[in-house]
Image (cartoon, rainbow, N blue to C red; front, side):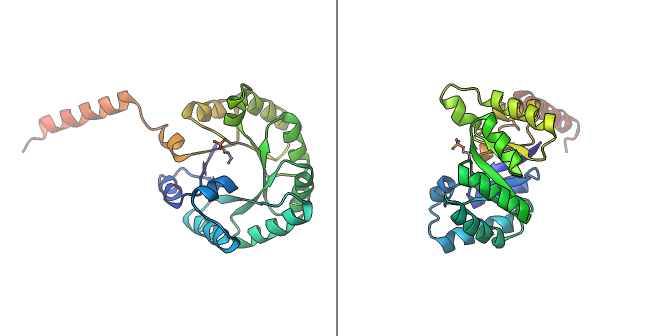
Length: 219
Ligand code: G3P
């Protein structure tokens, strides 16, 4: 399973990349705003800065919601770097834009997906990735992981090439369950990735190993 980091924070992206387990980066307009990035030139420069940190793909989201606008913005984003994947919302014109970019060989990530029907449309339109939002479904008492399972099953049944990118992953159990279910990718904050590290028996065991080594290696 691939690990993407869901942030526009350069320090966090670098930290995750330096760990050696990062396969990509996803951003969205809210994450860019959180970093205080505004204005076309600054947004593009920030995407370029992310691309320069990682040897991995970087999802950059369009703001337009009409077909022509999404095509114009998507082409501009794709020009920034070969690593850019154009992120398109799951709306009617978005489906058309996914189809267009697919025919042009530009990779896409279909975002704001909350149902199997939407995921089916994204795959049929040729999206490279589909992003179902697990946490936001859980927030309103729907089962986000069940949706991932459903989409993985449908895509396998029909051998769709679209990768299931579980998004809105809020904690380590989300990530582990996604791995069990067979999601192709998870995107999550840095703390979810580093949260996989800790175990009290690891700490206890290491402490013991070092103490035993020290006992027989006194100066
Ligand atoms: O990038 C989209 C998604 O991962 C957002 O997550 O936590 O804001 O629902 P969240």
